[in-house]
Length: 152
Length: 152
DNA sequence: GCGGTTTAGTTGAGTGTTCAACTAAGCGCG
DNA sequence: CGCGCTTAGTTGAACACTCAACTAAACCGC
Image (cartoon, rainbow over all chains, first blue to last red; front, side):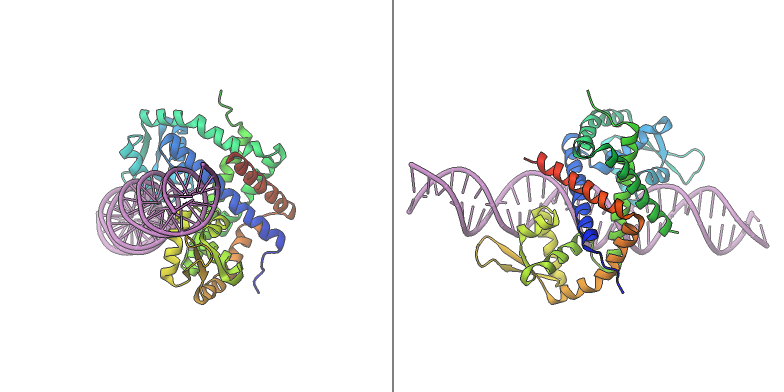
């Protein structure tokens, strides 16, 4: 009874897998090389840099990064060792922790950003037509929508 | 001089990141749960199952899976422990190794496949229109093309 | 305000990935 | 032949992620 993938779907799935893996690997390698951090850590710094006061609750940050709590907890622990983030007790909820971007972290992020944006542009947007960019946006939203719905 | 991302690109990039991460996480979790292996290992078994004699040279397999040699080497070592793959000296090149899918490995793959295909269908193809599937294919190919070109 | 449930976050063990260093065999060429 | 260069694959250490178990505080209902 399995609804197998037809040839078109099969080919699409393999191309998609290959493309996303190669893309993420390339960006990860570049960021590791130029900024000394994996892409996931870079994203944490980005989110914090956009937050008021450069700080966020751990769970909020985990949601923003699409990360599990455990993953974020480990990641912030490492970022704290590097001195790019520090933890602080949440004033309004004694269970809570705030992750705070340090000045050094902000500096590192500012240094890393241009190279990373060039990577994203060069590997992704430069390869696509404007209409493909629009379609990619809609496709991504559809996937996210489907996963969200199924979780309920 | 950095060509920053405009709003449209920024939003697309974040949606794409979120979608691929959530999708891969979901498939990985499902496969780990139902078949006791991560998606990367499943893919190795798939490729071997499609090869003549159910075997492939290590490097060939690494290329097919878009994996580094090191990663594949570790992965095959684990798959060998599980008894799903075995290694064999290459008859024509004494440096080489063949990875061979065992009968047990084939059995495991056959059991895992229907559930995984349902996942791919449910999380991805059911969410897209046929024309979006076509576009996703072209977008993926464009990304792969760009990365390949830059590597030279 | 007390006991059970939910929410916030951490921890450690186990597993997977990366990177650089390594062995061994094929290849090219004087 | 013999010497260097490349290719095939492995290894171990460092790092990242997952899962399940845990602590602690907030919330809820009576």
